[in-house]
Image (cartoon, rainbow, N blue to C red; front, side):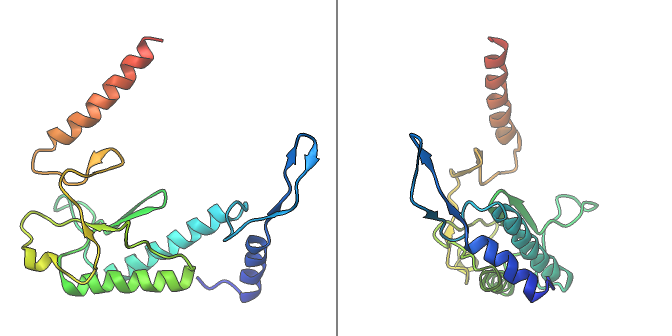
Length: 182
C-alpha cells in the first residue's frame, strides 16, 4: 500500500517484541513472550489493513474483468466478495480462468501478509446448473454439502427463500420469548 520501509519496520518491531508479566497471588511471573504477534494492541489494526489489501486485489481483478461478481437484480451493484470477522466469501463465475485468478490473488496475499490460507477450512459452492465436470476445477478445496451451515444459516439456498428466512424468524422468535419471560 506504499508505506515507507522505516514505518513498516517500526510497526513490525512493535508486533514482534510483545511480552507480558503476569501477577499471580501477588508474585510476578517470568516474562512471557508472545508468538506471531498475538495479543499486541496493533494486531487487530494490522489484520484490518491486510483485509483491505485483499479486498483491493479482488476489486482490481473485477475492474480489469479477470473476475466477475454476481448481481441479485439487473439494477443491483455487482458483489464480488464479502468479509465477516476473519472469513471471506468470493463470488465468481465457474470458469477455470477465474479460479486461477482467485488462486493467484490468494498466493499474492499470503506472500504479502505472511498469513496462510487454510485450504482444509476453505470450501467452494456451485450453482445448481454447474456440471460435475466443471466443478472439478483448479482450486483443490472441499465442496460444500447442501446440509452444511455457515453462521447458523444453510450454505445452499434454493429458489424458496422462505425456508431460510423461517430459520431466522424461528431463532429470533425464541430469543424474544426468552426476553419477554424476564
